[in-house]
Amino acid sequence: MAGSAKIAARASEHATGDRHAETIDRRIGRRVTHGILDLSKIEAGKMPLTLETFEITAMIRELTTAIEPVVRKNGNTLTTELDPTLGTMYADAVKTRQILFNLLSNAAKFTTNGHVTLLVRRATVGTAAFIEFVVVDTGVGLHQEQTQKLFRPFVQADASVSRKYGGTGLGLALVWRFCQMMGGEVSVSSRPGHGSAFVVSVPERVVPSADPEISHAA
Ligand SMILES: Nc1ncnc2c1ncn2[C@@H]1O[C@H](COP(=O)(O)OP(=O)(O)OP(=O)(O)O)[C@@H](O)[C@H]1O
Ligand SMILES: [Mg+2]
Image 1: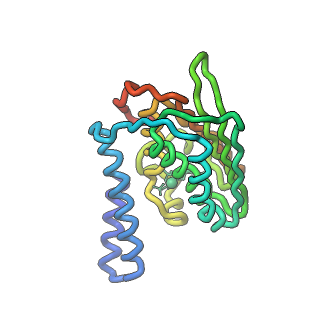
Image 2: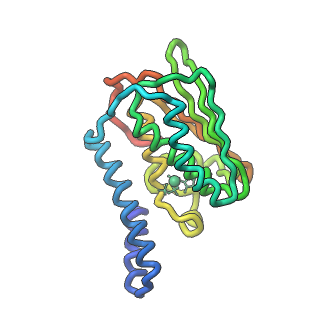
Image 3: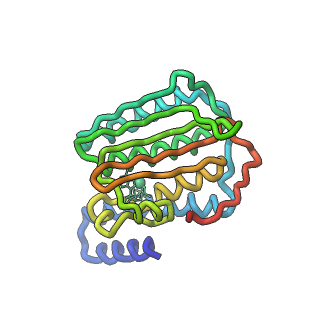
């Protein structure tokens, strides 16, 4: 597996005795472990949904306060556009926040001196009401064939990504799983050099019996 190969490569770097690299590698190692634990817990059905009613705008405000410094670090601005009629939703608040945090961190990471926008709006599909979260950036973007694989664990657009930006390629895999668990979905449209838009839709009222059985990302 690409991930274990990476860990092995990093472990051999340790042998060279580079202390600084060791600290960073330990941190990366911990993040990889947490990501894998999250994924395997979901697979074993041990990360159930915790459904509650929460105010959408309050959740978004809290989240943007946390993420704003990360966005600014690369010289980016963050704009939030919230539908004024947003009320509450009944969903897993922690997983919803994690989904948005992962998407916004990616937008911040893969964009320099640009813009990151978070749009939150209502959407209906037939009679079903959804809350749609759209994360748009003006960053490096992706080729179409890359966008098809991104939601699989340990996938990064190409080998240069982990060298240049770090990360483990687990963020979007978790986004995908959490969306599935809540009966929602995630999609991406992007063009190299023109930025990316990730769209997540989550039912406004998640049905507790939404089938938690998860198959692998296409
Ligand atoms: N907003 C974006 N713009 C350009 N490329 C992106 C964007 N978001 C994700 N990607 C590509 O998708 C890959 C997978 O994203 P993912 O969040 O799963 O992993 P990561 O950010 O590399 O690592 P991690 O999230 O585990 O720290 C990234 O490595 C990058 O190549
Ligand atoms: Mg990421």
